[in-house]
Image (tube, rainbow, N blue to C red; front, side, top):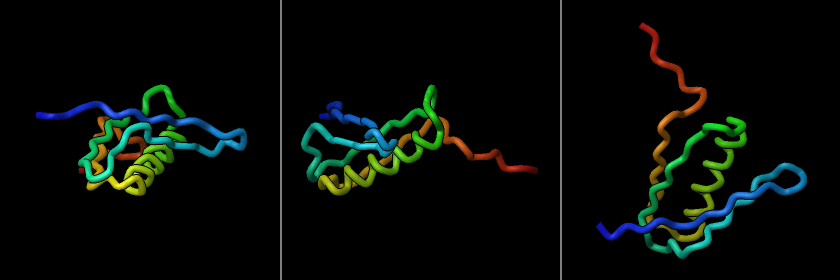
Length: 79
């Protein structure tokens, strides 16, 4: 498999908004994003994930697949 790790930078503006920068060319690539919500504000983490996917699509990614080992707010199905 010819797979490499890409670089992404996530920062916050003074007003709390999240800024996502993709530091490598992903145009035409299939992107797999692995996101963990440990040690973060859950709501900020979800927003960061959504902004990262939107930014990757805007940068020309052919597809974006998110792998989320634990997704906050998901509840187990009740019997």
